[in-house]
Image 1 (cartoon, helix red, strand yellow):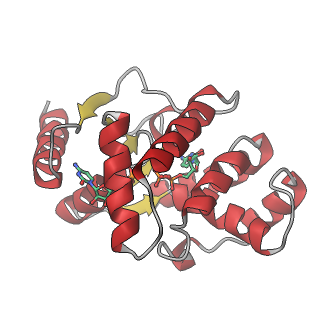
Image 2 (cartoon, helix red, strand yellow; image 1 turned 45 degrees about the horizontal axis):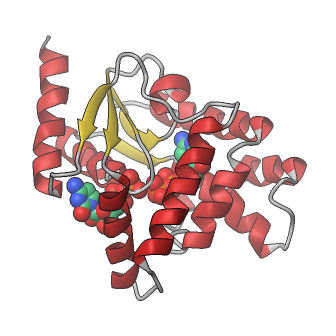
Length: 208
Ligand code: CDP
Ligand code: CDP
């Protein structure tokens, strides 16, 4: 069983993916972390984010089990991740790792931008999770403040909108709702409500 979850930044897809994986006894991969890990390594080495040869080399040595979500959560790393994410050769390398993860029994939940369209086009269930930009910026601001990071609502909102635009307009694997994905708008939902709605969609699809 494979559950594919896509959606824009801070829509709640990661939280849902983690909870669905625990609920259905599946493994979970936050594919955003793979792009963040490559971007963070380039930043740490002071290399340009467009250096695709080095980016691919970093991706080849990536250990999915050793990606530190906390260390990769910085705002600048998310921004840098969406810049390296336009590189087609790098995406090929990361998608290969992600497909391998998905194909390992007993199945998995993957969240990202192109899971339902590119990584797992034959997923058992596909969700496209969205929320209004203001709701997402509010959540991301609160999340950053709670981690002791600096955050100001207006600039977080601007940054999210710019990143969403880059992610949805790039030529390679742009963020898009797959034709057979279920849309889940969580603007008015707390985490528990969104989780119940997602379990409902998965259960209905699997029993259909
Ligand atoms: O993975 P993604 O960037 O889409 O979002 P996330 O990391 O799951 O959620 C971003 C933040 O919004 C987290 O702090 C969640 O706890 C919060 N959240 C929320 O307040 N209400 C929801 N319905 C979903 C997430
Ligand atoms: O947590 P948040 O939703 O803010 O971002 P993320 O899921 O960690 O992804 C960071 C960046 O990686 C995104 O803005 C995308 O540019 C890129 N990404 C991608 O292109 N394809 C994926 N499957 C996952 C992330």
